[in-house]
Amino acid sequence: MYKGFIKQFLDFIISFLGFIILSPVFLIVTIGLLFANQGKPFFFQKRPGKNERIFKVIKFKTMNDKKDVQGNLLSDADRLTTIGKFVRKTSLDEIPQLLNVLKGDMSLIGPRPLLPEYLPLYNEEQKKRHNVRPGITGWAQVNGRNAISWQNKFNYDVWYVENLSFVLDVKIFFLTFLKVFKSEGINQKGQATMQAFNGQN
Image 1 (cartoon, rainbow, N blue to C red):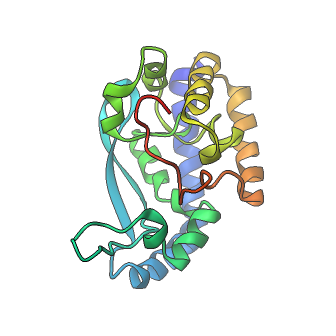
Image 2 (cartoon, one colour):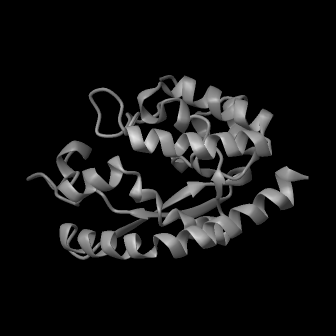
């Protein structure tokens, strides 16, 4: 019963209260990113949700749109703004996703929603991560976040799907605050975030 109605009900209530409590922070960060990103504090991106249904995730925009002389976007590291680094380090960039949870596209806890172009690259085991709604945080995030390999990340995601429970969600919820406080696993070594998944790494 928890996996269905109860989990979604708790998601809605906690997200609603969380958004109200964090609204002053939401407003301040929005204003700061308005100036840092030439009037673009948010970015919307298509992501696959439960059963691979595509939805638009909303996040704070931590990188600008600067391009090189050929018109190509600069690397993530070069486009990451000063305020963007702070927002990402403190995980404040995840706050807007509370709106996705309120809409029912996401859960507070579950496998992180990745890019649609990764869908054809998953093997049958990895595809199980889409048997539940994606989350703002998850088992992989409290076990390394972006600092672990893709294979380990998928292993954690699938393990979560197969062992989903109220007790596990509570554990992940509190471990997330600990990880944010310690600023662990924000990026992969040599990357501003994490290298792209190619079906092998």
